[in-house]
Image 1 (cartoon, rainbow, N blue to C red):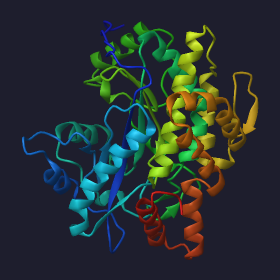
Image 2: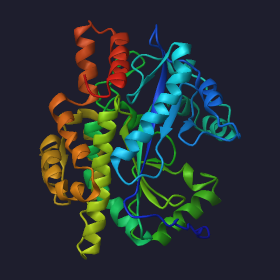
Image 3: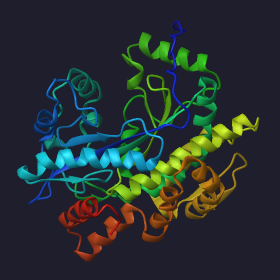
Image 4: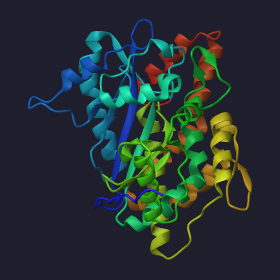
Length: 382
């Protein structure tokens, strides 16, 4: 076994919040992807140089990521994201480029996408080849501050019991390369093809995680911890747990709903630990099956809800969870945002709305792109 690598966990205020939202850059006329991220980043760069704090580059030149600051509430995060989007639009509107959410682009061809000119991305593509080039995918990442490192792994394991709830609600990638994949979230299963991506290992102790990182560094699998791309991971640099489960939503309403749900879950499990209660867990094989079921069936998934193997329709499980989390949401000041989960339950998840648009337009996927762009402007599901 390789030497353990110390992984210091930054001090962070409990249940602070940070949100990262990946967005596609699409042509206003054709709906296809445009490779203009570098133009955007150059235009928004601060006068003193360096990177914009709220607008970041990603793997591909068809993508920008908008990022909130460290916030106390989901509403504060929304304000930050909307400000960043305004700045991006000031650059993209004259270029006839629109912003689009969604876990994948419905018809873009992966082989035509250009990689950002940065060594870490070149190394990733060189290593992962065909699968790396396929990563024309977009996600939503939610960071929640944890004040005590000893809580991080237990809360992370507990979050896996609600993994399917988040993935089903956010599922927004039914189409790939012009075809309906039959999956609600094709992104979820594509992304896990990368080394170190997918479900996390269920470590019990922090030194086990440090041992894993030591092994990965020693064998050259990673050069830094950030290259561990688990769906739920500790973020030692920020002192947070980062949930990377969700497809990129097409509108700010759904971003808020999913952010509030994640925020409340972490605080809920943290409070249980404070009371000396055991957190829920499930065997890794149940977590893996739930990931597949929610990626395949979305809101129609029958998911495994506990270690005993009890099953329930995911939408029923979500409704029960919302009742349990209501007092937590009041405490965190995000009751209104958590309530927005009911909008997704009523209107359907993005993958359902996208398929409905495709049916109405005889399978024309440029209509689906237009609907995603329209939802981005409207700020809500249409």
